[in-house]
Length: 181
Image (cartoon, rainbow, N blue to C red; front, side, top):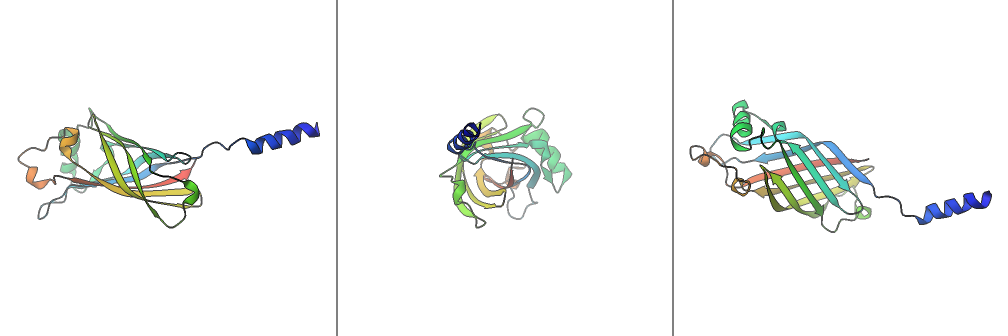
């Protein structure tokens, strides 16, 4: 019997430990589409979900479009009804990979990284590359970064009447504090 227990412990040491996942449901996703000398066009969603597979660097992010909050309620209404059509396209997703990801090399000091993948918004999917910083402290991995998108790449029409009030390139930033699952 003792031999079987010893063999089980030896076998357990040889079998690789299954990959560890990190996740959040309270990530922050912001966008800024303001132009100078015009009212701020910006919003934040603090309920963005994300999951990171530590063995591969694969990352997936999901945010509900109606979760974005603006300073001006009328902007929020126009954003949901006229631009991103939240009833028809309720979510935005990103599926990608952190390039050259190695969880064992992470520390409390953030390291620069590139994240590439597919962003799906308003029914259209576009490849993007985000500049990011990644750090690890205890059982948490923090991923922050940004990228730019253009509304026309996602078939989002900006009416001529307000086109001078909205930037051609929208700056998107993210802050994901992912806990070990």
